[in-house]
Length: 414
Image (cartoon, rainbow, N blue to C red; front, side, top):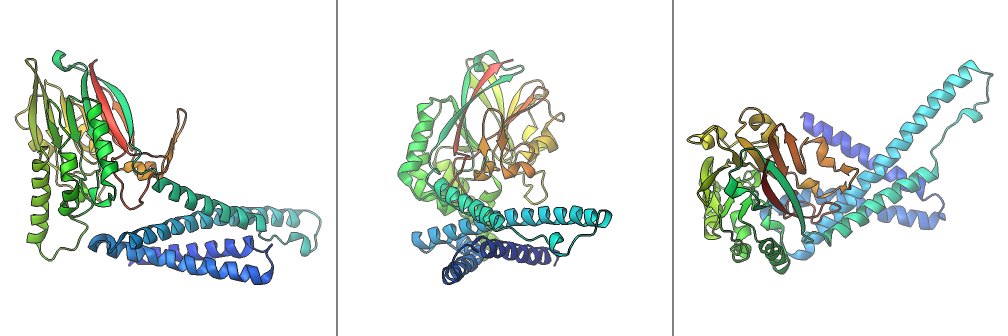
């Protein structure tokens, strides 16, 4: 009930401020033209609001064709543009309110002023700025669609305390969040896989979310991902989307069969799936422990299937270990300080929200307000976490300022 009330208030706020911005921002137009533009904006805005419901239904049950898919996603981009428009207009009203308070105090303590002199109204410029901001975000999101297959290789050197000599300089490629159900360009995906193999990795690790919901989403891309090969193997874990938790299944048996098929697809691709277990990597007489847990989140909204204690059973506390765990919040919740032998944790999940910007001086994405560790390398003492920004995409069919990532980690002795 509280959630429904919040949504109603939110949508009322959104509609009011988005349409107020349009009404005020278009005041410079002649009346017939202004009414026409407002009518068009209203129709598109209503369709954008309805697209959220349509998206939820079709994303669960499958898209009938590409036209419907891209139309709905375009309308969602319109919705996000309206959200930016409403936010700017709201800030304008807040500033007007602050100005009104100070003006009222001035009138109360200074010489009396006429009623006309104390009237504060909305400026058409604020409405135009709000519309411009919303339009800019909308166009940016459309541009981001063209960037969704522009895979970026990020090379990171990680100093590992106690790393066996034979593993110094080990080249590890991490992939995460493939989300094969969102793909629509096999040739582009193949180019991404070829880019991985061109790095000549010693080991390939996948940190979960192979599909959006259903195992069969991966089948058209199975042959492509079978080309992933490395001397020390290809290992994977499950992410929160791999369990089919976000679909209404006809029965529990159907859901379990979906998960069984997903695991079978990974084995057919030549990957070794780690389900709360460990394996030992051997090289030139030395060995390194690799752990993999099922999805475990430090945030209550996501599932906790993982069991780190079980994965660690039988391993030595005196030997460094690498952990594959899909959700980065697991690192602070169960790994750091508690298990010092886990020197490097590899996660994904956040996608960098597929939106943001990163420079030498500043990094920002909305996801940072939900996850403290959201992209890149983090350190706590002698323990490291790397959060991959994701190979695929989900929801938004693009990436704006947050390109899909292939991570090359070079392990060196600290």
